[in-house]
Amino acid sequence: MTYVRQQTSEELAAHMRYLQGLPGWHDPLADRLWQEVEALRAEVAGLKTGYEAYERVNAELKAENEALRNALRPLLANWDDLKPGESINVDAARAALGQGEQS
Image 1 (spheres, rainbow, N blue to C red):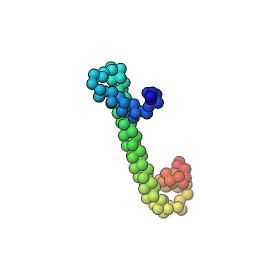
Image 2: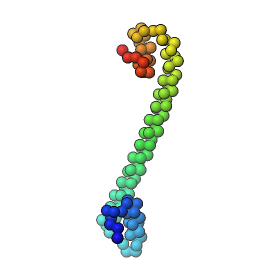
Image 3: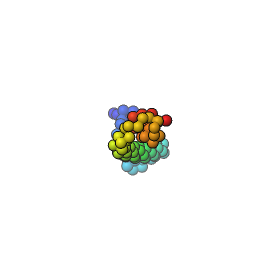
Image 4: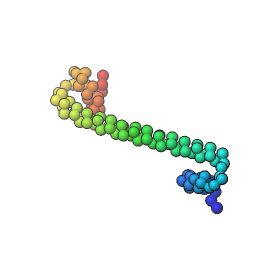
C-alpha cells in the first residue's frame, strides 16, 4: 500500500482521476482540494510562460546591445586621438563600452 505522502504529484493526480471516475464517488473536500491543485497548476503554467517570455526578451535585448556595441567600436576608433574630457560624446561612448569613465 502506498500512502499519499509517498506518492508523486502525478501519481496522486492519476489516483484522484481514478476515484472521480468511480460511480457514486463524491467527496466535497477532495473535490475542493482537486480544484485547488488544478488552479495551482494553471498558475504555475502561467508563471512559466511569463518567465519564458522574460528570458526571450532578455536574450533579444542582450543581442541588440552587443550588436550596438560592435557597431560603436569602429566608429569610436576614429576618435582615439581625443583625450578624456575633450568630447562629452566620445567620453560617453567610451563609458558605454567600458573603456573610460563618463563625466
